[in-house]
Length: 610
Image 1 (cartoon, rainbow, N blue to C red):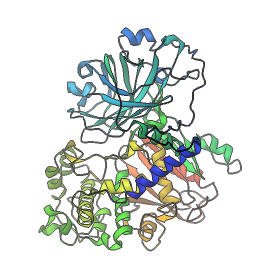
Image 2: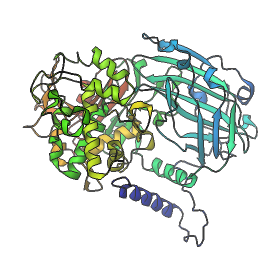
Image 3: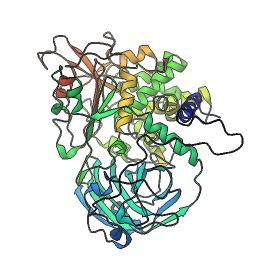
Image 4: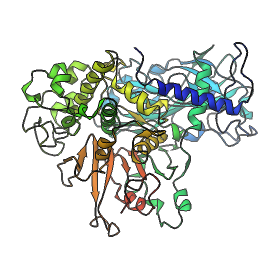
């Protein structure tokens, strides 16, 4: 059965075709002549090739020995990069990486690095095509490798020429190791030289991560094979990537916000403040059509592919996946979907007394009434949830998710469980299958109906599943991935576009308004903890009053997404969004709200900021 809402894919294909038509105003081909490929914005390169290179020289890549990490600038496109003389199309395979290279643990209290496999790369076999100076992997996003520790993601990189490389072209690619059955992401880069038939050795290193409990450097240099040949769908890959780059939100450095709004008094130094600098992966601020981006730090300088840095969702997926999927189902099939009972939609829950009367709405609100301890996140950090997170097979995860006893009537008590979001996601999946067929997948629906239409790139269009397999059940409450552009676009979709795409309502508007704290009579559940907040449909809501700042003459709510370790995506009433990704358990964003409140509401904002 075809995927639902496939018209969106056709629309994006049509948009690509329109871009091509605008850039190449030639008559249509009369036979099977290949279509012209749009260049990626910014190409061609204009440098002379006179690069003063001291790290990872051609001689080092020919017969080097990686003794340690080097500055990440060695993997970056230099200012004087010349257009590539060669074009890569085929497969790159790294040889011997499973036992090569070095490893240095920076933080590892649980001894993950004690396992030999964890200290080395998984199998790396990458099909690539090239569009100008851009190298594009045929597969983007999470890839299941079968490795005992790591899955893999490879992002688009660059190719260029330098005088010191002789007749060969230099290439560099971002990649990320993703912890198997978890959501930690460790970002790195690799580089090599190539011509039409061969490659040099490949140098790689990992120098940064978004992972609270496991932080390390990894490096190495290994032989590689290049198998030139046609990659399936190469033309489409080139065209789609050109459109993807063109479709990204306009970016400026965060410092430009003060320049663009000189009368606001906004202090851009407050963005990113309150977070330990070494723990801050990246941050950004979206306002009035511009995405103001921060840098991407590493232990060796700045990450050379900041816009491609892969960022884990952790519990922001409770909002962006599970909560948003319910809003989409409600728009497609009616708001009664929120009242669907788990016992009717999850076979393993059928007949269980503890699950009688629990609806999808209760579950997404963390109000099932099933728990062990009512204390703030005590269950989440307890033995049952530790087993749930560790369980890879679906059957084990589901058994543990269903194991909490009934303690209160459904809808009466907020107790945070990631396992509840897993149950809600499973219930939505079977609901969708009943509507559209047994091969339906609720994440595929989210991807096809929401993420792709709003322009989220391929790196964020794959989510983790049970059984370390794309055929498993989606985690729901974690396991998604972001890039800077994806975060800003998704928040814009919710906060200023109000769940619409090109004027078409995609999310149920009434339920979305309540989710975004725009319905005063429906704020959701009150959370526990020292600073109670609101929680609705997987989204948090925090009220700001004059007690927070004298400037807040009228109270207002900020809906936000929150993730383990130090991840926040806060959507202000004036249309601004502030986000940061970090891994030192720091949740500090009050100062960013105060600065955002100095900006006049942008078009589409629902409520003045104060």
